[in-house]
Image (tube, rainbow, N blue to C red):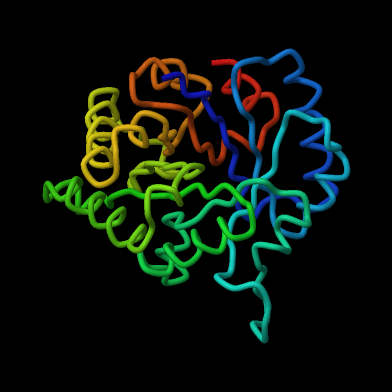
Length: 251
């Protein structure tokens, strides 16, 4: 079954609203004519409605949020809910990024709650998973990934996961310039698809998109996208430059 590739840009805590709008407009201009690939950028929450208004509803570039609160409303100062994200113009939300886990104490269980809130709001969740360098050195990669998926998706049934996207990001390759080698990526993505087949069904395993993230750049995207079970990329630093990101989109 054909899986449409998704190239997603995580802008993290970069770009003011004005800068985000300018970059999004430049990307929209550069990426004209691109076909057969879904494009998403995730600016900061403050910039989401500004970028959405600048691009317009007809733009092929879709928007994502970088985080979500697992609830619709309440006395939770500083948090942003799924309905608010949807209303701001986003279709996707990145959940469980390693930086959220490392710096803000997110757990597999909280990731599951956030995925549920995203689905309830009609958002497409991009669930991030990945091992640290010490875990890989200890040959714990598959154990960690299995646990993150099992605990993160606990309580979900097959019908809940139609739109779910997985993003495998080895923590040791995020922002370090290191990239997992083709054999490593192929092995892990194949493991993940086989794992989903065993836990859920062949149909989900065949249709779910599994992205690779971790120092993705114009120089390595082509090799990554040639791997059988790689359905796109979650791009960090290289997505901040519209020209670089456009090269990645045109892999």
